[in-house]
Length: 171
Image (cartoon, rainbow, N blue to C red; front, side, top):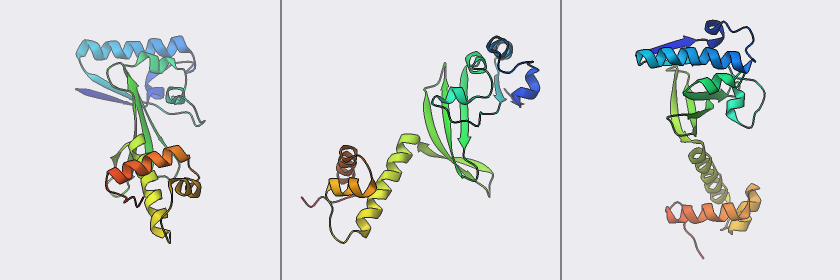
């Protein structure tokens, strides 16, 4: 039991998409239909182009649209980039951020992991690449300085990598 509205702007017939009261009211009517018939309704909408601190502010128009929905998801991808960030929040889901990768051959998205997991994986790979190219061992401070990273954070990551048997500590 699923209805997909593509796109919200064409469906809603809101006069002023930036009016909080009008967008909240329109979203509430749609939610009432979903609740009455025990169905899920996904309304596809567009995102703002501007950078925002809170992803909810990235939803085009008034924040009333997100306020009227049970859950809000924002898929953000840079032009020409295969990876995208999917930010989610809502009344009945845990707030999270995921990295997805688009496969042009199949036209599908694949989950790479949470943003934190992917960032740590990328940071680990940077360290492995650096140490592989190094003529001799490096101290945590040397690794941090070479990568332009925080010393304490790098030291903790190196410690985790040693515990995971990714690296061998010679000290």
